[in-house]
Amino acid sequence: WKAIEKDLDECILNDREWGLSPTVWSFMGDGNNRPPPRTEAGEDFDSAVDLLDRDKPDEALPILQDLLALTQYNISCAYCKKQDKDKAMQALVAAVDLGFDNPGLMMDDDDMQFLREGECAQQFDTLISRAQANEEAKEEST
Image (tube, rainbow, N blue to C red; front, side, top):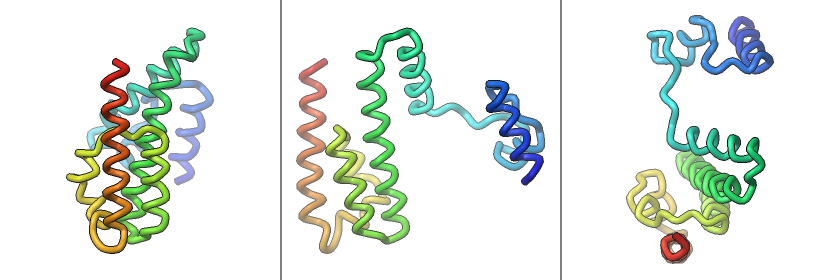
């Protein structure tokens, strides 16, 4: 752990991208000392930070807000896996409040089954409707 922590600190301090040692990649990577692939969300975040660096906050804000909504959605998924309905629902409400706009994902996501059924079903259905409204509003604005 000490070697990994030291290498991570050095990477952060020297602003190295994927400059981690084979020790770290053997622990975190795919076993072939390669970094994990960048996700679409990671690329969006990088794009938003680049826009901020170029003094374009109006272009960065929608990207960051979408990422925040997606993060809240995934926090809800994590709480679903932990069977904590109150925190899962709280995070899902926050996601939709922040503009989460993918009702199809909410309906198909296995993690969300925990909220789709039982005592949370009615509130979940309301959130589906709100996410659908978010989706329609986003389509109209583009």
